Image (cartoon, rainbow, N blue to C red):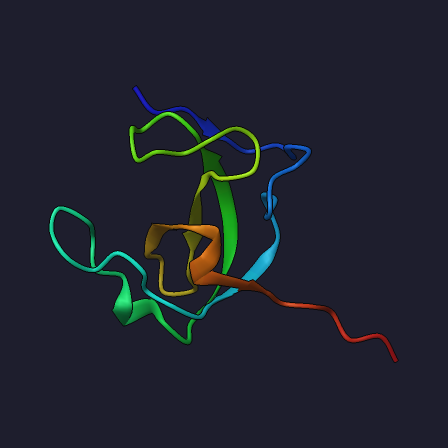
Amino acid sequence: MSEFITTPVEGSPYQPGQRVRVIDAIDTSPPFTDVSEYVGLFGVVDYLEYSCGCGQTFPSDPMIGVSFSDGRQQEFWAEELAPILALVS
């Protein structure tokens, strides 16, 4: 059973609430979900997931659940994402 963590996890590359951009689609062949349609989109990290059986390790290598403005949600590896940094004026 998968558990979604919606609070900060020390050592995770991304945290819930963080804005990200999808920059790559690493695993696109079955049985993996092809996430290439998300490349270039911006979203927000909803949760971290360590127990779905995809080879995650705690705390540094979770599946990262991201939601998008169109209502879709998808999971990504850290290597498929880039942080969106706030500009300070």
